[in-house]
Amino acid sequence: MAFNLGYDYRGYERPLTINGVTKYPDFTIEDAESGKNYFWEHCGMLHVPSYKRRWDAKLAWYKANGILPLEDNGGPSGILIITRDEANGSINSEKIAKLIDEVFGS
Image (cartoon, rainbow, N blue to C red; front, side, top):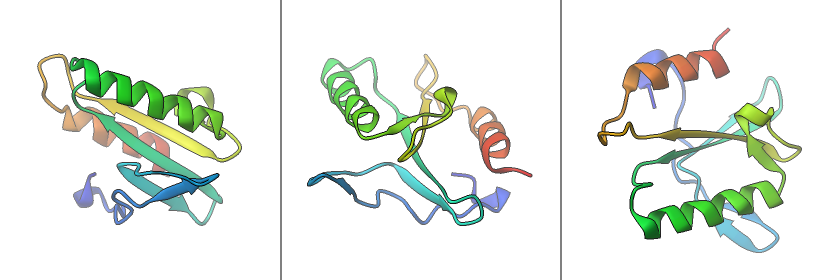
């Protein structure tokens, strides 16, 4: 994530255990001020069938455990931020920086 924007990203692949099952979100961001927990997943290879299957299962696990996507206003156990590579496989850093500012900016 954008260190140069001043956001703390030390929660990289921190274990998240719920009901005895552990997953590793790409980033975990705990907002002490609001009390909200954000879990950020970046999907890089959705065009690969095995990756897509694993992602679909992980997304279902998040939802079943009350961690819902940002576009659904999150859930009782957290907010899931999902980003994806562009169609050509690149990462649009401007788009991600804008999302960071929208979610965590003042």
